[in-house]
Length: 271
Image 1: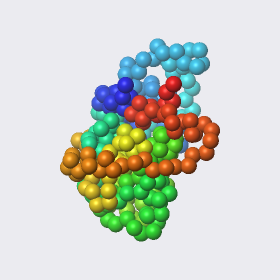
Image 2 (image 1 turned 135 degrees about the vertical axis):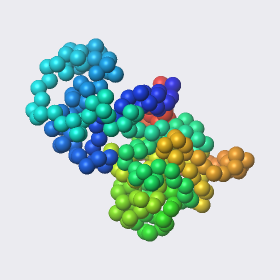
Image 3 (image 1 turned 60 degrees about the vertical axis):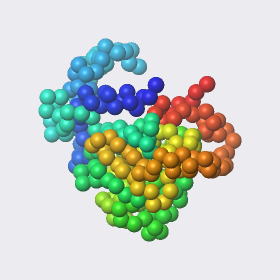
């Protein structure tokens, strides 16, 4: 089962009733004072199955009925289902020949001018290599930074690429460049980014054969992530591809790297 595609369908029918930084001016303290998660759950109403049992020994409905709010409600920060920020959720699921099994982006954290982005790839096989390229001034305006081998198996552990995005912001590249990865991101990141690319590079996903200079299309509104390289060329590159060797210390991480599922299936251990 592709859990991301299931989430995509739920995203279409679940309105976005709350926003915080970087998608809005409010921070988490503002959100908390507006009622936080309990207020959001209460306002979602019938969209949630409030008969579900929780760890308190009570149902969601019972928990919400008993919750004591410390501050008055604020409908500017937490809106209603009838008057939401948007009719659909705040996460975009992308697909295409660069992400056959889906990828994830967050439109609310991306400048609308970058919702459709086309640029030339500049590739790094690790988070650290990409950070070095950004800080070293290697990245040019209009390029797409590709960070691969950072997925569940490749990382291992699917590390956050938040530092790379922060460095791009600091270097003045966040509104002129993009970043795509099989890793993940922090909720505080903003800029044009796509993560959770599946299959990941370490499993032989298309991200593994992207070369510097390849053209990449990111269309958040249309849900597309495309590598503009002919299928014949992609197939030829795969013939010569070999997964890079990576030293992983013995222990749980090494085991995880061997058996973890792809991000679209939850990045879980299969046995």
